Amino acid sequence: METTKLSSKGQVIIPKPLRSAHHWETGQELVVIDMGDGILLKPKTPFPESSIKDVASCLRYDGKAKTLEDMEDAIKTGIGAKYK
Picture 1 (spheres, rainbow, N blue to C red):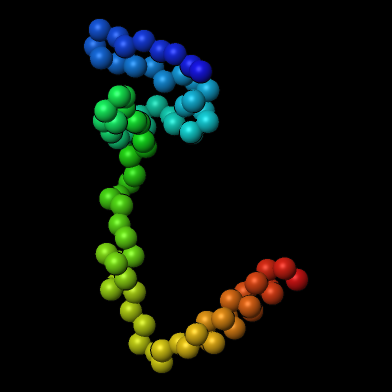
Picture 2: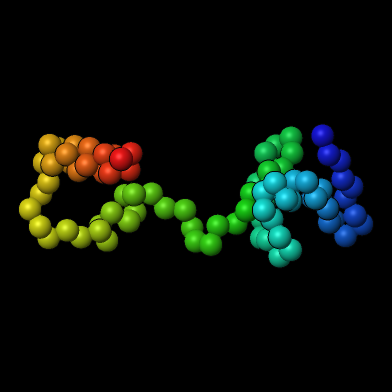
């Protein structure tokens, strides 16, 4: 377990092994989440999280709808190509 100290300016140094393990470089923005008995630091994502419901309408397909059999055949073909 690593330890660190809070500076008089409220700054905390994240130990090098943890920064390296998470590939955090100088300038990395972190989201700070209050967990009640402590805090959680997570890397800030470059854009807000979204769900498939949020973005599915932008995936337009004008062709004939695919059947379940069509999709299963495509999956088998893809897997077969990958493991030849």
